[in-house]
Amino acid sequence: MPSTETIRGRVADYLTAVGAGRPADIAALYAPDATVEDPVGAEIRSGLSAIEEFYGALDGVDRDTELISLRVAGDTAAFHFRVTTRTADQVIVVEPIDVMTFDADARITSMRAIWSSDDLSIESRAAGADHE
Amino acid sequence: MPSTETIRGRVADYLTAVGAGRPADIAALYAPDATVEDPVGAEIRSGLSAIEEFYGALDGVDRDTELISLRVAGDTAAFHFRVTTRTADQVIVVEPIDVMTFDADARITSMRAIWSSDDLSIESRAAGADHE
Image 1 (cartoon, one colour):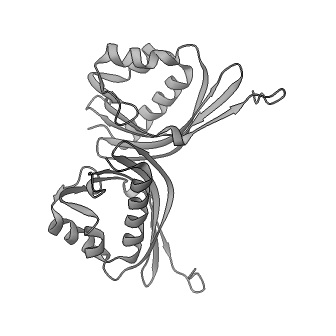
Image 2 (cartoon, rainbow over the protein chains, first blue to last red):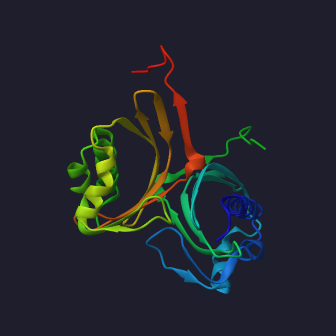
């Protein structure tokens, strides 16, 4: 089982990769037979090609991520984080709690994202409201 | 499947019951065949008598709980919360992220608590430091 520090590092790597938005880099953090359920209750995606396809929606999108809180126990991490996505006319913020398990090589074996549309905030980007 | 609002209410009920510290009241929120893994990686306790015994450690202890953040998706809730326990000479604070699933009657079917001793803060209760 990877150490708590190793798992913390992998969660940081994941948030960096999601922020950068390159699906192949995100998928590379997963074990070959990993599963993704995002949000919980949605179709479970299994295996690297399905996972890379899932993250394909992020490709080239202007977004960043910020860790709010992280807890680790055994092979499992739970973390609350913020994803901010900027389109031409909107800023979309969602703050899920994700639960991940890891294998002995610290690859993600499962990810379950707990959030709903209630947790989504969408703001129009009025003139002068560009924060970046 | 219970509604998001119902699940939110059950999480609030759980935190109230944990704060009040009555093991039977806490166990009554669980389904008969429920499981508790606290923290993740520890022995899994199964069934109401094992669950009531687990919470028995809280009986009569001065503690309160505070919800920090809560997310719900499908039948699953994840929530970050603070438990503050006051003994004669210490104040112990832990802020786990718990993941719970619920059945159609909104009874808890599983609870997994993600935290470690890294997430525990212990302060001596110096004279005059009693916050309540």
